[in-house]
Length: 124
Image 1 (spheres, rainbow, N blue to C red):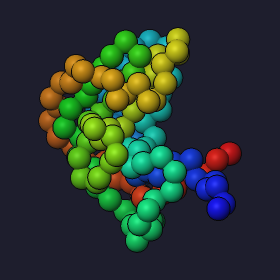
Image 2 (cartoon, helix red, strand yellow):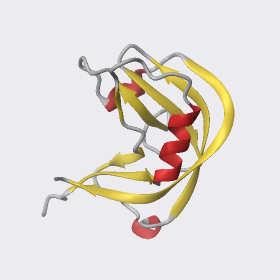
Image 3 (cartoon, helix red, strand yellow):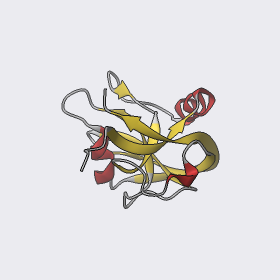
């Protein structure tokens, strides 16, 4: 049994989608660390590799904010997370991307699309 060198599987946003997402956010709190990188599908490698490398479209429907994280709620591709999302930014004082799962306050936005590629992210 060989342990996988894959940290997580995700829909990795392309540069244009990352720029679009950041431009659609009214205000990221001062000093927060901007991420806007991917939507996690699951931790570790994909069980089914058929979609690896496939370009997919995610639709942003809501933006959420807590005291530790800001995220865009998305649909369009399955995720193990209860609320599929792209973490936009985290609080530099202890905020972690996983804390996007704890956001309870979501605000509707005019839906817009992001594109990305189904990818496995390897450990550094």
